[in-house]
Each structure stands twice: as C-alpha cells, then as structure tokens.
Image (cartoon, rainbow, N blue to C red; front, side, top):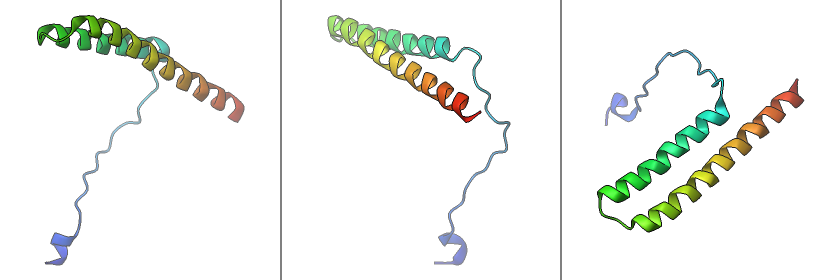
Length: 83
C-alpha cells in the first residue's frame, strides 16, 4: 500500500455556527407531532394495524416531547448557573 492510500480523507465544510431557535419548546412539539402523524399515515397507507398506531404514536409523541423539554429546561438552568 502506498502512503496516500493509507490516509483517511476527511471532508470539511466551513459554515456559520447554528443559532438556537427562538421557540425551542414549540418547535420540538411540532416536530414530534409531525413524526407521530407520519407514523399513523405510513401505517394507514401500508395497511398496518391502525389501532396500534393510534395508541403508539401519541405515546411516542408525549415521551419524546417530555424528554426534549426536560433537556431544554436543564440546558437553560445550566446556562443561568454559569453566568
């Protein structure tokens, strides 16, 4: 093997730093609502068990949203303590 074939190539993109959302709680709730609707929609389109999807999707929405909000609140507290 040659020296150049042993090296790993890495791609680097120079981009602006990501900015935080102005409404992180709302945005996360909307995202998980869309994902829950997508689960129900795919289940309906593929002929799956719609009753199970209508039970599982809201539960997943609640768990994911609660976890996301907990993480946002924890981050806010840590930033407030750090200042």
